[in-house]
Length: 161
Image (cartoon, rainbow, N blue to C red; front, side, top):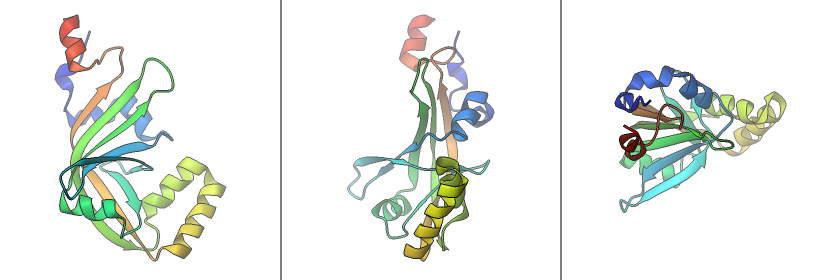
């Protein structure tokens, strides 16, 4: 009926639904805290390196500094294009570093989202306007999956028991 007891387990990253979403072209939605403590959510390209979700942007982007200051973040990657929805939720700690040129993970994401040729062209353009990239690695500390077949939101699962 439900595998809600497994929610939170990092082993869920190996679940076929998680793997499908981690390798999809769906953007992640990154939630972080602004300097005043209020939440922000942005859609963003990501790259899964097998251990962390990696996002990147201009090193002086306001979200980079906010995440550096308060590194507890959350991500959601979902496929809500048809029923049943599939949702991967991740909470984690972000690590920010600045790399010269375009971060390799951003290059990989551009190619995945755009395809090889357009992704390569995009990265070449970005490389000309940004000497550095702010790279954010989100190290998962909690993982949840909702598939609305065997894993439901907790309140629904309780009523189904």
